[in-house]
Image (cartoon, rainbow, N blue to C red):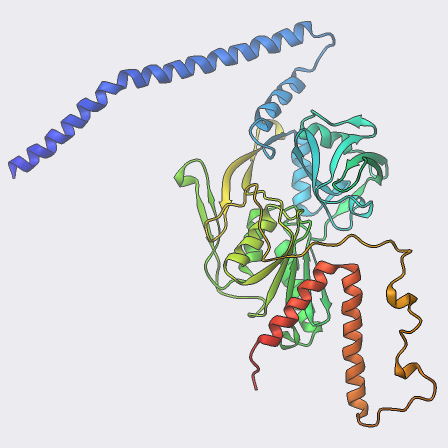
Length: 446
């Protein structure tokens, strides 16, 4: 027993000796780092004083400090930034769902301002701004080389005022100008409707109202359909949704999952990670779900799409999403400002990060550009497109009852509505066709 104790003690002593041999160099390295940091801070102070004393024009010391802080944060990644007191107040208002502006979510790429997505029903959306557009000029002034916050400030202005932005778009040979009238942006987080026998949930953003709006809207449409038995399935439309609050993405995912992981986050330290799991209960009651995404679907949208895809709860249709796989934490600062800092990466239930890769749809379906309104369809120009029923004196069909004829006419009306939807929104029509196919494959209760 004594030998064991001694061996253990010997091991401990050896560990102590080995450790103390490196204490000196480690302390020296740490002191060197601290000295270097203090030297850099002294350098910053020297430059600050030189600017205040010798710059060609008088400058505001507070503005200089804010610019230095913002520069420090924006050098980290495109999503970290300093929020001035006004910007912080605007951000708090936006998460509640109403703010003034153009209605676009932007990021920075190669020195230019890139549109993540326009927000439904906003001036930018009405003006035809598209996800993936690059903004090069604002009212004739170049934004190249500006910090993102500076470019955004250029686009701000009084409600009702006009702004001219110059856009570079893939597929267009030359840049072009777009005129937009600034307005108060009132975000409706979720719009719901019945499209045939499918419930369409159009989620435009993830703010405080998203899950309550979704739950209420789904219940209303199910009631309008006469109950869940009459619903073929659900289309969760996340196209051009730039994201928002993480907790709302988790709640929306949980709404359609009975169990399992929704998303995990991993920070710099292992203890900074979190894992979020679904709770029992499925608002769709097991009905098939199709999720629509495109290049404007980012962040929280990708969390939802990734979770439902990994659990095979939904078929994801559309085009590759934006690829923002990081989590930002907004930290209040003295003076009513705030710091938005990237603190973690998030991972879908299968453990994949979508950072810079995006969520790949199960079925790739691009949205074709609309044809010129002046172009006539083949059917409209075909003089021989009439049917037997259009001929004068044609015989009646005497083999069908009145109810059967009405059912055929109702089915035809649905088919014509579906055809019209393909012209208006091909991706949505494709999603509804998938739901019809999945419903047809389900076993009958008879």
